[in-house]
Image 1 (cartoon, helix red, strand yellow):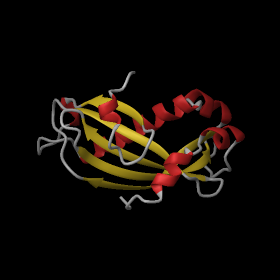
Image 2 (cartoon, one colour):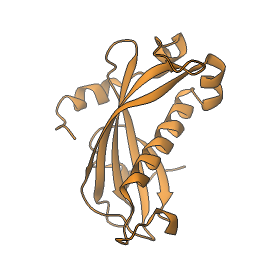
Image 3 (tube, one colour):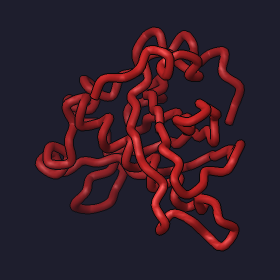
Length: 161
């Protein structure tokens, strides 16, 4: 999908992968805003879409018997999303730490006013899907789950989530 250059400006990091979602009634909680658990679903969706674009769709992970399991999530909620909002979820791969883990940074923005609604950093570990045990990255993961150089440089200046 083509992206408006104005909307690509002012992300926390350069070269984001962007997934778009529309807030639905199912996303809304008793306080009339998007429930915090929905954000994790959005992060998951953006991560899967980005992985597929990088050449690692779910089918490839199943074939390799390898996947990435969430180890740790840190989320800062800045502003609420409400019914009718259209949301952009940006994600970036951050430099890997070792051969078992990868980190992703996320930023959630509302289309209407380009306000940042949330930021997150999620750490994943590679697992063997058939056993659930930690596993080293297969060559395909090492090839595709690589932080872009511009992202790695810019990430050094980011405040923690």
